[in-house]
Length: 320
Image (cartoon, rainbow, N blue to C red; front, top):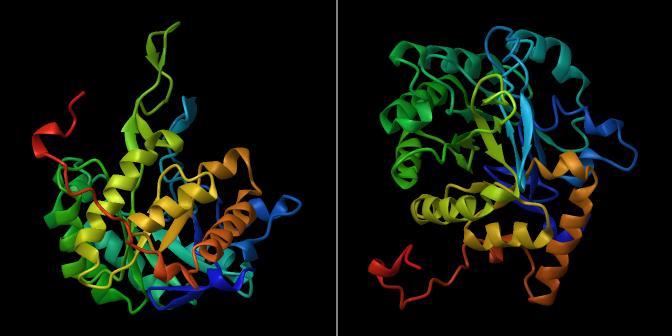
């Protein structure tokens, strides 16, 4: 591993700024079956979204391809927190990389209980997926309500000493305000962004392709949106020294570098793994070479170095 890629995130020492994203690598073992793949090539692995009790997930189809991306609606299929803690985590090779558990709930109390259970384990950090619907409040996603996001993070913070990373939804009016509320509630880091909501339609049946009707859009198609959201969140988080995992459509080293310049301290790789499982070493090499070419000794020197154009007129934004 290139020495200039070593970095720190929420107090965790990472060998690489790459984080494998939740839902894309199962519980950390799926891609290790591929010849040439190693978890040692990444700084951390986010395990699959876990709920308190087992979930079967959504009806098929759960995934469909779109131009420059994919839509998924897996529905958080998982064996439940107990099985993950007792049966899965003991088999993880913790000498290779860091492991982050992704937790999801249908109530504030469920989030808090899961955080408490993982607090007694050797997991390195907890990522809070606040894009889940709140069944007690009519199904509105926690992440689309800053006050609700605050309550979730606040309770998780009370129930664990592990580093907390809150995964922000782009499907809201003011992501900067949401980031501030999560920081106020005690989050140690932010993951920006979760998927955008999208739909695919089968013209033969005139029905949605996805069994759940809609799902999360990921892949290169969302990269411009994700970059902007990282920049917007960084304007808030930099004042509190709260680091960001920048994610959304990263396929190449140059993509990753753009996110770091925008304000991300680490970068998440997800959809790219579906068609190039060995992409991480290529991204590592590209980032390392960029640092060398620009006389930078570490990732930290590049984070948030974006120089905004000063001549932008507000009335011209979005015009053709």
